[in-house]
Image (cartoon, rainbow, N blue to C red; front, side, top):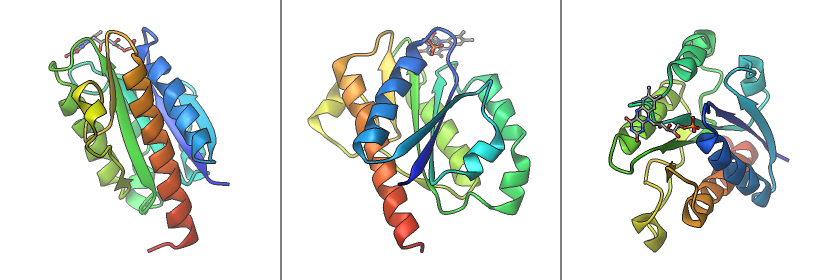
Length: 169
Ligand SMILES: Cc1cc2nc3c(=O)[nH]c(=O)nc-3n(C[C@H](O)[C@H](O)[C@H](O)COP(=O)(O)O)c2cc1C
């Protein structure tokens, strides 16, 4: 069974609720979820996983806590140990048009810097209401559409993790 590292920050609980749906998607995909908040996560946890999904509140970008966590994982960047693992991102904020995609792209930039392989969300009618090519989203509340997109992201990353582990490039 593949193990997916679910790393997120959340002060008000919205991103945590989106993480619940991502976790359900990881299980849908037949994976095990190693779920950690930014306060409790260790780089060693990440090394024990086959994929990564990271979530941040939209604070006009990722939170400082998450950035600091990644800054402290510089050894992994240097060693390239994460290269080739699949990864996805999600964010929760107040408004769909107040930096959502910019925050996701900031997260994806970090993941790319670690050599991770980005898994996004494909276009669907649901994307009119929730989600982004760059990852799962929520705004002010977590709607059933938000949950469906976050769940789909969890399942997609898990599916790619299984394929990549079975046949590494
Ligand atoms: C410092 C700060 C900056 C924020 N900037 C934005 C923003 O640019 N766009 C937005 O939609 N929400 C913004 N918010 C609102 C948060 O994204 C919102 O509170 C969200 O629910 C946080 O997720 P959480 O409940 O998981 O902590 C900001 C909040 C804080 C505290």
